[in-house]
Image 1: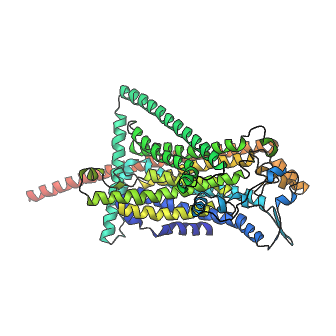
Image 2: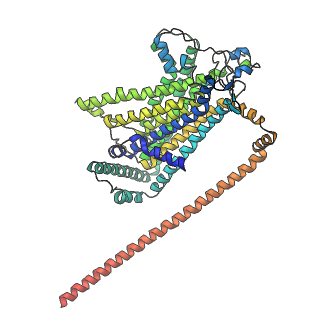
Length: 601
């Protein structure tokens, strides 16, 4: 309970953002975006604390000699010598641009730091009665930050779902609440009152737009329905074609970039080397920028309601962004696990080109994270700000027609969900990446805040925060399981590197679990193996299904009770209307009688 209260206080702080001013001028959907962004700042900071405390801090203590340590290389005689070869960075005199390339790409001097997986080569730490197993801690902490993210997002999503469900049940009730009970009577400042008025106006405008589209859909004829369904099918085929082209280009650029880097030769040009190093990131960013624009044009012909149009376009764009990351990782894994002349048999992977393949994947996630921040800052500084100046101070008609930048909530949500998915994937390969993500989102928060208040105008298509709060988290929940897929694949199927990292002794990272269980006492070991067997799993699954069935039946019963209570409220409302009409009629008759009696007198 104390942790929940402290979390609520941190979230209520909201980075000291002026929420009334934002919601009044730009709508409550913008406010919900910044609330979502501040939540990710806090989430990544907690993940960073978790990773630093259980992985990085023990490594720092071991490096300073406070504890007796055991390195995997000290007891790795069963590993072939060629698998142990890992060329470390040689701090010799190099050009300045090489240091900049290393800093931006995570190679060179940055590769042999606490930032990446390969640097954590301690297997065991002991001091008197204290014993710390770093490989086991690395494995458990990885799943801990995934579960922490899952529970935290679900908790917030459930709260948002309650609000959106209640507000979406009865549209007429929503109108009444906004008109008759939407005002905040605590407002005493004239400026705050104006902003509150604008916020309510935005909400009502969105509701009316949705009702208009729903009425249009309801009035369609059978011929119009067939026509629109055929058109949607053709447009979805076009969307699939766009996705195939994006995936193919990403695959080819990733292969080319890896082949260029594996030659270990520099062209002597900072621009060329950095461009090739960032080529997959550039292509992915270009695809992430172009495909939503194409989807936005395509979806206008599909004739959906405004709320569904935003959600469907957001789901499509999220799928593209997340699938682009998966294609990048698959391209890397094909390079890592593919060898010529049976070279992979010795180590289980292409050890000549990728002696520490986990670090290489961590470097790719690091580059995507850094490049994403650079692009967001560059667009704000070199696109949105000059556009504001041209529109404001240049009376040229094309600039006036162009207008100011509109703050698109779906596109901005896409960007941060994409970045958070990169962070979840990369944390296993780069334990300090959540710290970089915290700084990144904190910076983006203020970049977007300044850009919103100075460069942007209110959107012509606003939407409510009641549903967006839940939907943002639902989209984020799509990214979390997709982020788990490559992590699980790396842990369970690909042989761990034999020249770096804490899992040198194990063929796969997963083997640390049975190895640890086998070191337990016999009774505890038999208990754990029994819990993992089919004898326990089948009854447990049946028990969970029964509980789920009970909860579904209970929810259905509660829904029926709610419907009955609504019918009773409606009946009471009709009874009150009948009584009011009767009282009005009796009052009218009484007044008429009184008037006639006065005339007689």
